[in-house]
Amino acid sequence: MSADTNLMPIPGAVDPVPVPRAVKPRADGKVDLVGLSKDEIRAALEVAGLEPKQAKLRGKQIWHWTYNRGVTDFALMSDIAKAQRGWFEERFVVSRPEVVEAQVSSDGTRKWLLKTHDGHDFEMVFIPDADRGTLCVSSQVGCTLNCRFCHTGTMALVRNLEPAEIVGQVMLARDALGEWPSQPEGRMLTNIVMMGMGEPLYNFDNVRDALKIVMDGDGLGLSRRRITLSTSGVVPMMERAGAEIGVNLAVSLHAVTKEIRDEIVPLNRKYGIEQLLEACAAYPGANNARRITFEYVMLKDKNDSDEHARELVRLIRHYRLPAKVNLIPFNPWGGAPYECSSDERIRSFSNIIFEAGISAPVRTPRGRDIDAACGQLKTAAERKRRSAAA
Image 1 (cartoon, rainbow, N blue to C red):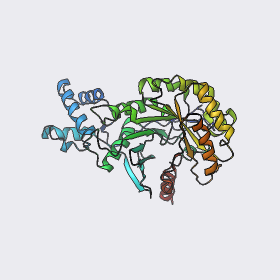
Image 2: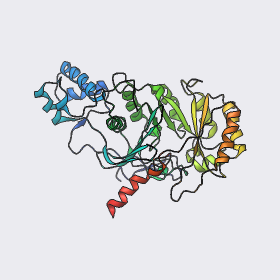
Image 3: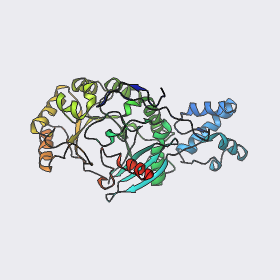
Image 4: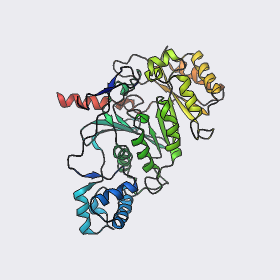
């Protein structure tokens, strides 16, 4: 049986589900230096034939050109000897994901349909606001979790994205926004949320390694306070995420009872609400200055009653969580089994939480006209596949 058809039990609405496919080597045989740590770049240069002292020097120079200047062409790395640039070009590449399609919403939101070097589609979204610009980054091609309200979650998992493909999304956005050389002030891209396609904690090592490069002061230089990792509740990995990555935590909660959460977030059957909230209470670094965000999609007549709001307040208080709640109006898609709660119902839900002293803003839907809103990262990829097959 091939690796593509091998099966293993992973929590979700359908069990078992396919194991993530192995990543195929690049067709050109070159080593991609994006996504490698400084030590890994130096080691790659040594393996290719440079002596250690030379590898250390060239590695440092390549790191600077790659992450500080945004350069992808060895010929432009002016402090590397001309004769040596061709040697690098033959063996290595400084990559970006391939852009299949780029769209801009009427509200300024940008969405990119991207392709991996081995031909798989995934998406990223940039959301500009007056005081910040947030990049929504994908961690997998597809998803295993099958959350019933999420269009992205109806995709099969294809494979994990590698560190190069995760870091590459940030670098591609910097390209598009003209934000090289890298600098801490005056950026349009100020924040990153790991909320795109996939469950980041099911691709832990690659997400961790990519975010370390993003946070490196000599790399992309984005503060960990500006990065949020969202999980649907992979409880065993949450403490490691806090200890080894240390970014802000967001949890896709979406329900306050076992029955409802089992239905709309099937991972709850594996790790229940109580386990999840205990893991939130133990999350390293969580405090009133770095609150945990609970994401809560508003589904008509499903999870949006005043009783549900009061139970949410009770749970946050019971577990003594430094928390805020993001209320997300449901973003519809063809065949969705739910409807969005009414504006009046959402306001009532929000008011109950606010009156308990917990922040509960209603997220303004962004990019709906280009299917870039929360839970919609599937449509463009599917449309492209259908048109190619036609």
